[in-house]
Length: 95
Image (tube, rainbow, N blue to C red; front, side):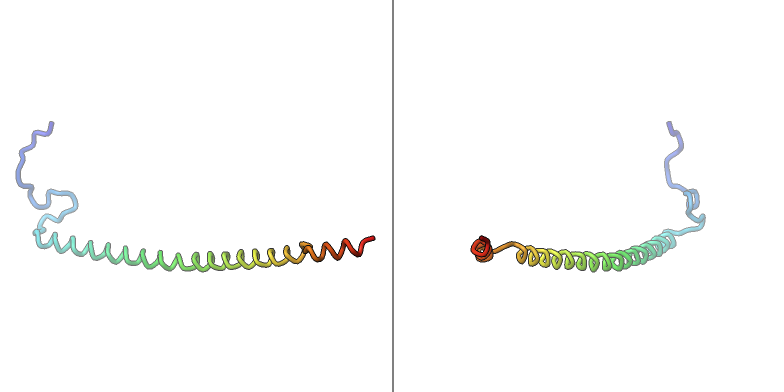
């Protein structure tokens, strides 16, 4: 059980706070820290956007190559497949 007396804590008795800080100074410190964090988050966001561009471009190129390869395969396969007219010609020519 903690049997310490409850009441107002003296300035400076908290960890990390200067002993002569006023509430206004503490508020200014908090505002400065928030501004720094805002700048850091903004920089991370810019870097994330820069990192996603090459991925999108690479995905688009790969997708285009796959489509072009599929079209080429389809055209090649159609040319190799005998048509009904071609099969009829072959049947007439073969004795």
